[in-house]
Length: 72
Figure 1 (cartoon, rainbow, N blue to C red):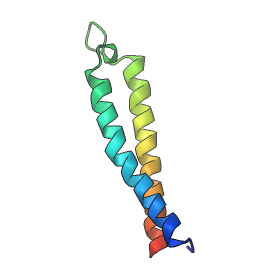
Figure 2 (figure 1 turned 135 degrees about the vertical axis):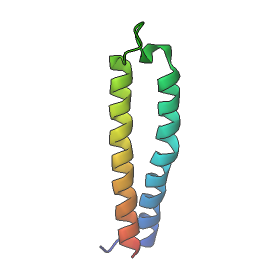
Figure 3 (figure 1 turned 90 degrees about the vertical axis):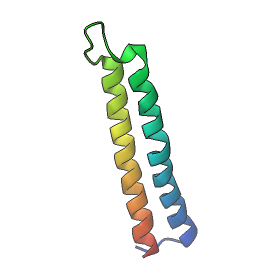
Figure 4 (figure 1 turned 180 degrees about the horizontal axis):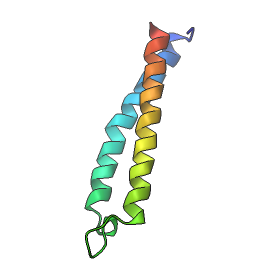
């Protein structure tokens, strides 16, 4: 893969950013009272946010891998 070094570094930084930000966000969502109903079951609020975080982390990983591959 032939990308400029600056673009490769940007992709790596974007990937790392996802792994710094999204887990923190998920911790806050899990503690939110809207995350569980009275019976303790997960609500749609929690499910949607878990999917959002999972997709974002997957894309962050892919972005970082592309950035590393471009550097090598």
